[in-house]
Length: 544
Image (cartoon, rainbow, N blue to C red):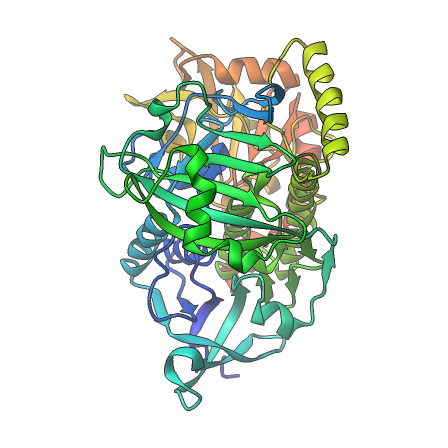
């Protein structure tokens, strides 16, 4: 029987940061990818400005070091919420280093990061970037997906070129008005959260933070007269020069959002903050409607969705783009495994079950923050202030730690400590190479033993299946030990003690699949995880 013809392994609709990252992660494994973008030219203006430690961990796998990169910076400060009198209502820990080995919060310029992603993707021989085309039709069957495209009529008119692409899989990372999601008939769960905010991205010609020593670098002004967000916007256009800054002003009831966004009115809002046409450039003025919604399913057959196509959240937690990057990584390791014949097609279902609950957590959290911030009524604001000031004083002004979120049900053992959560990462040394664990050991399925060879604890069948996954089994020992991987700062030693484990299985997305206290415990939990992965047997892989 003749095999079906495919133009590409994976077609990706939408070349923003989520789609382009997915293309990179697939292309690095040699899979043929077609990345489709509606606009022929790259969008040059800011949008997302912040990411968390988990995204820094992902970027590091691409060789992007968030601690030493000209396009990324950080502020060793807490995140303050203040009322209009300058009293603290809440303090959030955006200062510490996270358990995953990176700082809690970083700031960046999205166009610069996107261009870097696109350069990496363009250098991969199996990745094709197709600009100026949008989806026009989508049909899928048991063997693949047929995607019809047309040139963007807004750029090329109604009579532009048409194309058809046959792919084994399709990913829709094409934004809030996703063609892919609509074509698949996937409905949204909408929480009915609507607030309009004016976003002003500024390039001061002076060091704004240094000029305002009494103000934090990153904070929320919870003033009912005009709730306002003041945060960094990442490094400025000149290396070593002043950083970008962002102001977000809530559009008040009865105001015309479009009128408020006009440059003259935007500059009036900025006057009290010391910014004028003489000392700053208004890079972007736009009104956004903050929403809270998610798609009810993120995969259907051989199609998947991610990023804004799958979820929208208010920006108060700084997790919108972060959630999209997590989507890309979660899609990538599953698609890589299926395309390489290691995993069964059913593994795609766990993408929805895991990611949807994770994203919902941050959506709900962002809503809760918005309900605190977006108060324009004086009496409600006074009630809020009194309650929050009292609660903060009761805990001695202790900052709220960064939230730890667990994946939804999926490919991890629910009876293991820390399973479904991001794994701890410390500095390790191996054959003279000293760095973070990910950079020394690598990314993939990693079975870690506490001063013991974990491969020896697996059954022969499990060892064969783990080898099918290209899994790595390593022993970590204390400084001065004889094993290949040395726990330089005792990070893993403390973690093993905390979770009472001798073995930990880490997934390609850095989440913990299982923890086990003995060989028997490891074998029982390993069987569960492997069955949920739908791992092909070595004989099946060889036959294919």
